[in-house]
Figure 1 (cartoon, rainbow, N blue to C red):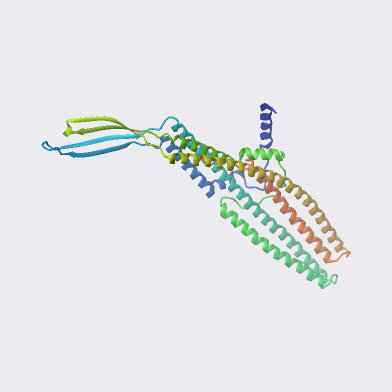
Figure 2 (figure 1 turned 90 degrees about the vertical axis):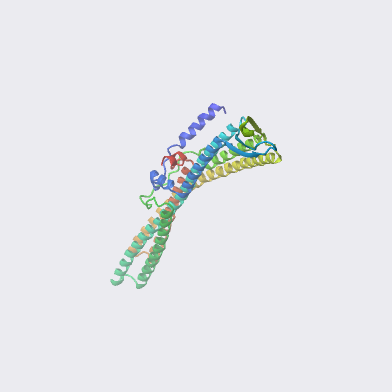
Length: 415
């Protein structure tokens, strides 16, 4: 495949992945972005970015500064008057050619890595947000379904008691209806506790977010195949980009330490007054450190660190590639599971309605009605859980490919 063909394929891939619709049961992008901006993990990464920018300024300025040296002495000469003598010198080290350029590249790469770490922090906070958000939605769905079930069973109980009074039903049926209602109310209470817990945890981690709610969103698998989403994820992953910058910076540091085996000279300008001012001395000084084995060992150690970080980058690439593939498989599998469970829930609901009708006609007992209703309830719960799980998997797929919320450092800096 030619370079031109590869480029066209890449452009087509990016166009296919761009603009994918996110599940509508998510918080608004603006609200989510504000919550991510205020997350402590993101703010810590922004502080480290400022630290990297300060380090870049330090490297640009260089390690050498002006030094001032003053000395004074009293000269005693036998048979001659005493003299006060003094000397002043100003000194400064000079970076050898090439070292300043290396320092500038090291500082710039450090800033680039810190920017990627900000994006990585936003990404991790967004993953946490998704997990907590859908956990709250799951708990709310359970509350809603059990609440509806309790209301239905309460109405069923009233109907049974009316029939008992009229002599059309046995007292045992009333006990069955009461037991079913009591169980539903107990399940509702447990669901309400889980919902309050999930909402509390979401609020504590992301206080800017409103409580989840709104209409249910039907899962819709985004366009593109597994290979496309793996490529799109790798192209935008901040953790991988940060690992690349870290490996690059380590290589530059190894080059910098190797260059330090040629020590920087220290140049000085000296002025002295001797013999009570009768002699004036103006001179230059040059000092050069004689390098030892320690500098070579430091360079070799940093080269080994650069090699280790290059291998770490390769490991990060493999892991992210596997995660992206799993995201796609999880999303596509979850959508298919939801569709099948939705069909099963519809069938169970129809069976429960037919059983209810048969009971009204005296063809089946209350036990069969309650069993059919319980089966329909379990099918509905499973369907709702599958729907939300599918939407969460889709959202995670979009998030990792940067198709969900802003995750770049420039967004944070603009806030």
